[in-house]
Length: 232
Ligand SMILES: C[S@@+](CC[C@H](N)C(=O)[O-])C[C@H]1O[C@@H](n2cnc3c(N)ncnc32)[C@H](O)[C@@H]1O
Image (tube, rainbow, N blue to C red):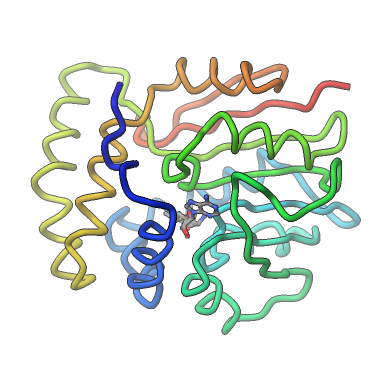
């Protein structure tokens, strides 16, 4: 499967997120009809981090995906390469939450630094999925957890075709109007369409060295959670 939207240079992707940062959380709520809040709760449960544990939330954007971990008593590092997204997030400080600028392809963290690592709606945007999964593995302690939350495929073919038409025609129109940035939401549609299905992503996670890979669908497969552990 080609992923033509990845022809953008990393600097262009971070600049695109910088431009939508101010309205990002509002748009997420609107476009997902509030489902994003439910997905984040399930991610928090899957990560299962509590007091005394350190979580890396990669491609954390404004840190909305990170706050569920600090709410559960864990400490969390919210890492992203869009300074615009990080700045919006830093306006809402939270106890135990630290924002760090960094690239998923060369993480600025020591080996085995985290008890758990997670990435929500970010892996699809990273130029090299395998390299990002390998970096996540490197910074996770042996036995530590990975949770990937990402848009996915609806298992019923007819429904998935309808969903793809919604993504291609309806979503960019609504999102373009609300955000004033049509480009970012064309990118969203294309990236969801071209992203691999549940089984293929599971295979890629295993190929990067993670063990015990499994997944579950949320909201009929609009989103899938992939779970795995660092061996050892
Ligand atoms: C759709 S947002 C997701 C934000 C947040 N995790 C959430 O669930 O709302 C995707 C984020 O991925 C970040 N991103 C894309 N490629 C990246 C990379 N190579 N390194 C770090 N962050 C990256 C973007 O800057 C953007 O903030």
